[in-house]
Image 1 (spheres, rainbow, N blue to C red):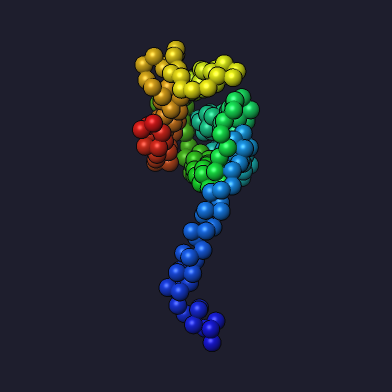
Image 2 (image 1 turned 135 degrees about the vertical axis):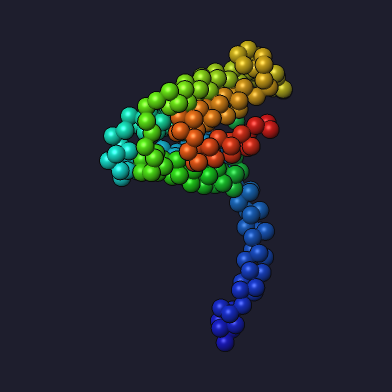
Length: 212
């Protein structure tokens, strides 16, 4: 009888799950993950998506130089974010587990959408728009990597406290690393020919890290 009432009352189920969500979230939030490990785990689903999309993509997309060039841009960025950047980090604070899980979910979903679009649904011609987008992407990548390097070397061993980064694009914008990444994905969207997945990704990136 109790089981029948429970199965027929979604409100009771909802209230029960809600009563558990508070303690559960607090428990998860108390779990911290090493920063380097967190970066690798949360960013690497994009590379898994890229590999699987390429392996099982359509023949037309897999043999298209334009598609492969744009996919390579995506892969290069996330190889840097998944492995190169974390291995060069210095003294970063641990990540709360829920933050890492949310980032991992975004990377997995977005990676699937972008890579499936490039390897199954879009045909990217090699034209001036594709070349312009890749050039903008390359410029953004350079700015992003250069800014990351300057931030890593901001403090000498043993130094603490706030420091203002100087040099490179930091002389013109306060968050050169964020600016470079936004520029990357704008170029990526242009190289995709203004396709909806690329435009959406660029817009979401700008909304997420632009205010910083």
